[in-house]
Image 1 (tube, one colour):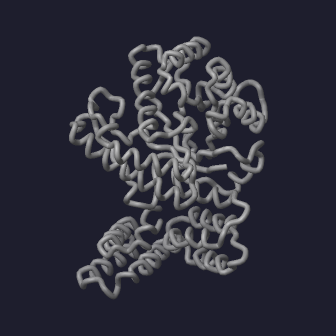
Image 2: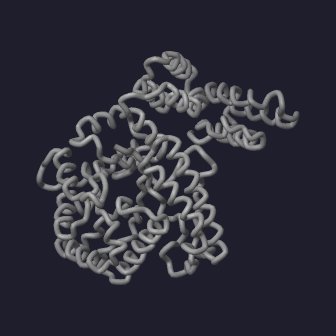
Image 3: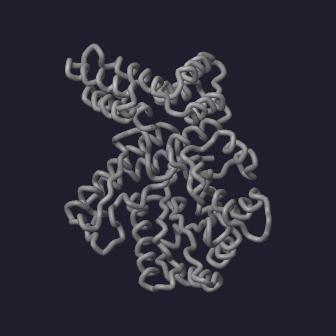
Length: 419
């Protein structure tokens, strides 16, 4: 089993992705942004390898406006060496990557122009994966599209449009149930007529269920039969609802007890699970460690090194509990560790805790910082204590110091990336 995340990485400035508006889409800007995004992708791949994350969804926007007519850049040639290097890294480390076009890629659209643009977009995605020399287990995930008042006609339109796609796209395409229009039974029906593998999405299923009330494990088993050896291990999507209550919105983080309950009931523990969650790689590492039969204490110590100052900014009591927990080197307890992390995340903001954490981080600079920085820090701390300065402001100041002094330990700290 591999557990992965989608598109964006949290915790490193080197992985920042850039976008480009249509009005600014000159050839030079497209070239510049594509280069930066490929560097960011390379950094994300390095992180995934280092953290044993073998499943990753690449952002559709790596090449800005990749399928838009305005993009005339021959990016495959311009970045051939960089694409080849990233692709070799993916292959040699046995990573499985995928892509997932957005909501405007509607292959079964009634409007032929919209459908044609969708086909072009799918071709762009296939070209990108091909440029990385990814094999056939690296897929493009797509929703069926719109119902347009007639679900049967919409299904038939999708099947026809799929048949018209070039082989390079058809060989990579997989289909997924959505939260409003096409439930899992609909998607399995289309799979029978197209041979497409089916991705089961648990949150979409909870929001849009077929009339047949079948256990989730049975639906996953039925989906498994659509995955042939050439398609690789069956893949599913897992997510949880955001506390905001917005229909279909993903939670900020995967909760350990909910995920473990879901994992326990899987009919096959070897399937790949793509997490759709806002804290991205953080939940992927968490869930990977939680499902490993034996983890090393260094795995939790590495996680603690990144979380510690953020936890301190929430609660010194929880900070001390985690430190005590990690003293037991013989019995690393990932579940207890992450339950405490979640407990810290659930706490309301505490100005006192924020000041305490900021002072601890300042300790890295207090002896070497120039007088002006010392006065600036004292002023920020005073304002933070008094409620006139936000935690984000003092974090930005400390982060700039960490960059200026090239402090890798601090630059990797989640203190700077989590609220």
